[in-house]
Length: 377
Image (cartoon, rainbow, N blue to C red; front, side, top):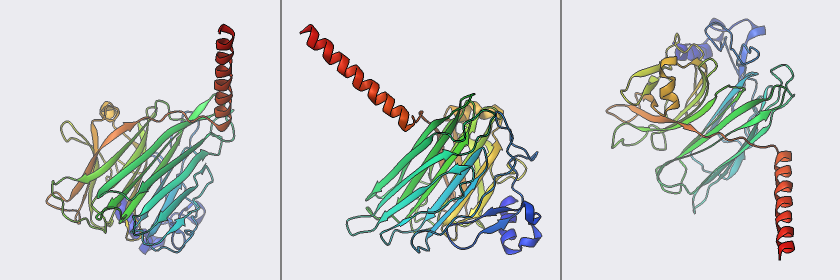
């Protein structure tokens, strides 16, 4: 299976790597880049966009965090048409900031993780922005609009708290296209006010006709789950963007506290009857899946270009699907966490110049209204 080969490639790179000129480069927020073999977007080796093809999801080097924290992991994969980036963090024990420098060849996606540890409670503020910085289609502008977001957690309550931001921006043409984005973060607390671990995902996609963004928070299947596999409670987060042109999805999955070796199942199912729709560990059904061990902090799944079965698209768009993860260290008897996938609104994010024009227009209308009232009085 793909997840097994990923581990073996790290142990014996020469056995699985493609030729040096064609290797995909990946790196995390810690240590040197790790090289691996081919990463195909589709089983055929190509990925259809509305107007052009992009062949490989290529990740470049990522710089180390701003302060030396061994409990931080970050990886981004990107190509001309989309990106997926995921972060894992253990307990917040010191006040500081992580500012990973992700590869920004196609998408500029700076993100800052501001952490505050204190007797009064832990705080986490994630601020970032995403922008498509290459033209893909003929006549397209060099850059699309900027999607800014901020996710803040202050002295979180016991359990799991998840927050998200989603939106789309205009990528001017002609023809005019759009870029869609979603960012999700969750924190786990076994003691109220303290953050035992947190996870973060961000996804961007260019020009997906009829696109939809969805997210989900994974919690234990059993009513009384017991302790989690890591320092926090058992949980996970996921986000995806669906493209109706070819029924493909770009999806990120983060589960803290587990390792890759114990991962038994990961699939999207139908809520109404439990039917398995897409097995995310099947290298035939999902040849593009990349599963990573996050340096002992958890597991990260990069599902890029997977084709969602056409028969079940109404279920996905109708909030009738769920994601389930089964791992041998999760609480029994089911050893699983799962969560419903919910379509979320992704409104248009106007550019600053547009906001200025809207503000000027609103002020002009107010002034005209006041002038009319004075004249009538």
